[in-house]
Figure 1: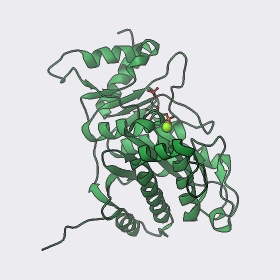
Figure 2 (figure 1 turned 180 degrees about the vertical axis):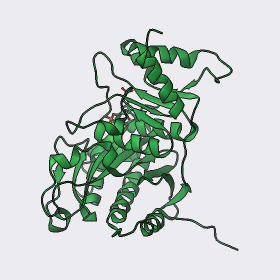
Figure 3 (figure 1 turned 120 degrees about the vertical axis):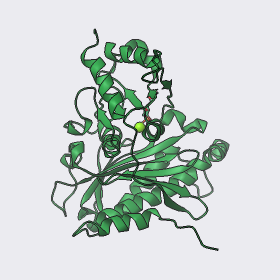
Figure 4 (figure 1 turned 30 degrees about the vertical axis):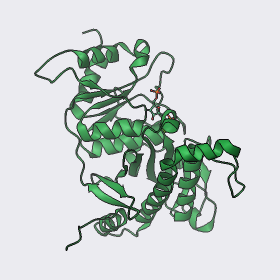
Length: 338
Ligand code: AHM
Ligand code: MG
């Protein structure tokens, strides 16, 4: 009997590193540690319902620690993994108002900073619907050996060295890019390894799915309202009407559209002129992945990765997915009255 050939995430990372001259393995090590935290968080997500029951019983676990909400738990795990990697000098997380700097000797010398949303899709956490983790890696601009500074985090998305997400879904996947295409790994829980399952992901140029929170319809810009009507119209040549699909977890909505072809929109509204999603740890990493898969990501006008971040938790509108669909909605936004 011959065994089947599997490529684990670590094997893949190391192979990729060998193709980059002078690479010292620092990024590989960092990604490896992200993979470890993902497995720990996955375990917790899988038994979230049970943990919640225990939590309600006393809110103190057997070690005498307070039960952690999943998002706080995920934040702690990824923070610890990045600290332990010794390659990362600081992080920006949705869970923390300010940047966190790692001040031990090895981390101070770390070359990278990471922006992350440790557990995205808050409204789905308690109801067993897919959630995710999003991460984005930059080379620091402050000198190595010193504390990371805010400026290290306020770099344009164009400067990303790597980005990816973990989707805790019907199976758990880690999808990432280092600028050489997008690759997806499925967690084989039997052997506890992420295994290459979706090499070189390319998203269809056009798709048949539109994803946005239509409950906010009345607040949407006219161009988006018109585009929604366009999606719903019958037209056999362009395969309309499109299907409406919206989970409310960016990672899950993005992942589905990436695989099948579609568009995800979180637009600006009157009450939220910059939309809801955060540039540093939601929009930029997704934009990097979208482009690397052949898709697009804009704020309705400007490429997401060209935007200059001003603040850590800055929000921007997001239009991302299949290239032709993003260009189409941009046309509606530019000429809403046509
Ligand atoms: P979160 O980071 O607090 O989870 O919020 C981000 C989430 C995204 O996953 C999702 O795309 C969006 O918020 C859903 O928002 P809404 O409920 O307004 O449609
Ligand atoms: Mg989020």
